[in-house]
Length: 194
Image 1: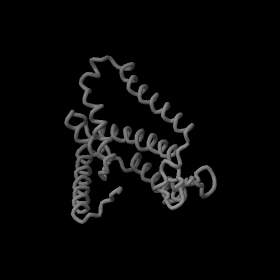
Image 2 (image 1 turned 90 degrees about the horizontal axis):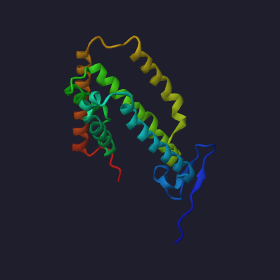
Image 3 (image 1 turned 180 degrees about the vertical axis):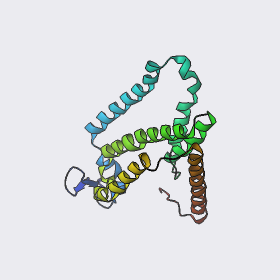
């Protein structure tokens, strides 16, 4: 039996690569562009080396020594959502940074910056290279204005008055997440990839 060839559906550069009989989400490797994938692999490798070397170039080793758990913390924070848990790294960063005596606002800023790089830049670029059909561009006009409005409100008129408010909001979020996850596990409604 011959392997079905990949066919392109749609128009433009974001056309979906779908093999006959498969859904868009199952297409996966049929969409990989070898040249672009190779370039992105080299770029990611360079970014890894550069971001690892940057602190060593900017700060003395004595200042960096107390921060040795941070790479491990980043690894754990990336593995949890990667394993399918309905959380992102911020739920790990805030408590761990608080244990290292970082103020809540700085912990949130660190978590946001970290998530921006991982979730906002590297992950979309990886999906763009491996399977551009995962992007649903028709939702962008619907999602972008509320996202920008929320960003502007958070940056300017709705700044939080104290660190305690940050902790209360985080605690409320964690409680709601625990209820959601427990309910999903008990009723088997959480998304199962297989």
